Length: 412
Image (cartoon, rainbow, N blue to C red; front, side, top):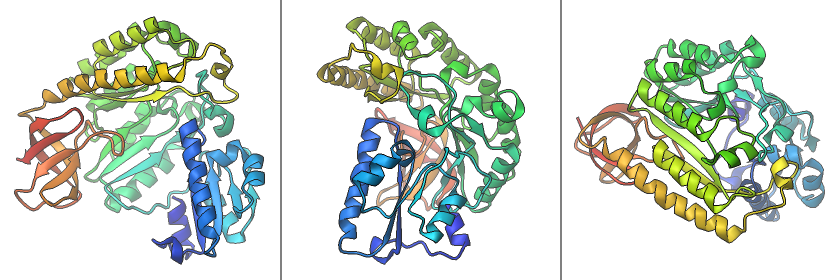
């Protein structure tokens, strides 16, 4: 969106840093690995700046969380901007302001977008009011705030008009959408509205808090024509004791009930989750409970993370830490365990025909994604190049083979 606003004001976006007069780095302040990656990126550009003249701006969550520390420790950066609407960042850049960090402003009405591919993320809300003990997001993102339905609809219409084939709705917690604007969670209302937008496109929803998924959400995602039956619900663990320490409300048995309701509504629904291993006090019995839970849930897709302390969170104050080597062993065991589940889940599609969004042409194959595959985090479908296909485009593909994460097929 920032790119679109800058272009609308007459600025040119260049492909090479050697041509740039201004370089903008966006950052993440969520977990230790993301913070480290952001710092490394900043330092790389600081080093490059020694022999090139450009205005270096760093913005986003890391700046919002550590404004004064960054400013004092990396003085070579020309500007530091926190969590601000894109229009305010554009204003600050044009004025070459060196420091703009206020209360986080996570939602905005701008809809100017530049499209670079077949899919686009659309923010429907930001901030968070949940109390997960391991998460620092509420401290630097602020309270949960929703965008209104009309603004989101306008943005989606513009993206579809410009060729986007998959709209991906995101927020810190999409299940809470609308509670601050309309007095109650209204994700199902938003989905019905977007489903009525004209055009050949699909809608995928990410970041559904499992404690707050209800039957209205399940029904909307499972039955609406343009909705992809894909449920991204990060449960984080399968031990009731650890779930309680994490600040989660639903027990493992209640989470399994949600999984069953989703599959009852649509047996082919894809269910993705995220797991944290090595949470403070996690014992061998807790990890075994987690594996048993995953064996029952049989998630189609799974992402795993090793716990790391985030300063200021309740979990960081728990003294009984899990040694890193043990957490690493559990992490690796978990991935091996899940890989077999993922493989078995994909095997059920062999011989069946799926709708695939073909997005890329390689030498011998086309590459696309089915309803099981969110971009950048899940697998791909590789399609034999028997005929020329328009990219991007939706095609019916008969699945002929699978691996743990990917599928192969032929055009029907």
